Image (cartoon, helix red, strand yellow):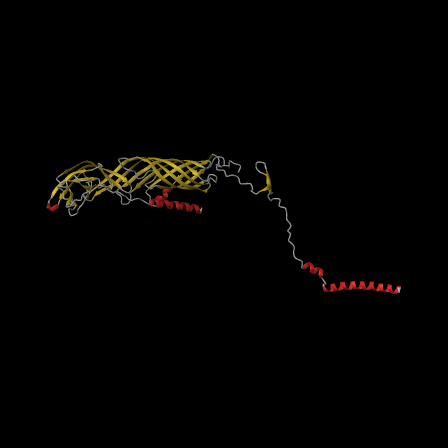
Length: 165
Length: 294
């Protein structure tokens, strides 16, 4: 009887130990688009842009997503979640230039349960991307969608001759 | 003269006789117990021990011929004793049909007491074949209502049916059937619905928030289990059994790209599960007997 109790106790202990182990989410808990900067006429390597400010159009606080004081070769561009359109303005602050380019993302949102640890996030299926301005040549989404994967999923190609590199 | 000679002869005989008696007395006086002394001082001879004949002692067998029948130069003593141990039989010793076990798996009841938010309960039965192989069928219900800590959703699934089929292999198949140590395999199936509610998605930058629900999601899952366990008789026909199960999915369907986090009978995302069962044994109509003479 004593061995029996030992056996049950050991089994329960193993189960409790196993149930206490849970993986954390290795990806983003929200789908967060990450855009990399490239030279439209150069090799497929990230380029660093100076004095570039990024602001979302119609943000409640009108605050900059990324200030011009930071040199950057990537920027996160969170999409709106109560609208299927998100616009960002890229402002060249180099020597008071003030040139503005606007990029518009149109997409459909589909919530989905990724897994227990990462929870529910949107999948943004990109329908179109347009850019208006001088120094952004084009913007692409190679996969055609953006999920919670912790990877770069947008490419922004700058016309280096015009961009504040 | 003649008389004188006779007298002298007589004196000589007397003197001789007297002298002989006198010498014997002297020796006797010097060595009064010479015979005894001689016996005590003599060196001890080899001891001899009487030997009993042991009738049970194996008889020494001498071989005068080789295995081909040719005479040997010298006789050879056969020293090896014959192996009297009977060869161990690997075959089962119990009859083909050896009864039925019916069990109730209540293991998740224990884990729910420690905070687990899902459970699978099943009734199972297996047939004892030679007390060796146990074809097993398990049928049960599983459900979940879980809001994981620091997560943005609640996952619900009402009681959903599942079934598993497989077998156990009892290592103690020649021992008392009341005690088993077994390994086994199961193939499981479940078709179930689930809802993901109270979803909250926020965007800090845009200061937006969405409350959503995903309802009526469906999934079908096939999975396998490899298990090892024990079954121990408690009293009469009642036993307790427990098993540790490593499980893996063969296939799982997604609905609208949603992946279920709980599968009835399989459990949640952990690769291991534990079952604890109360078992009632229905023995075969005829009491199991050893098939062999032993």
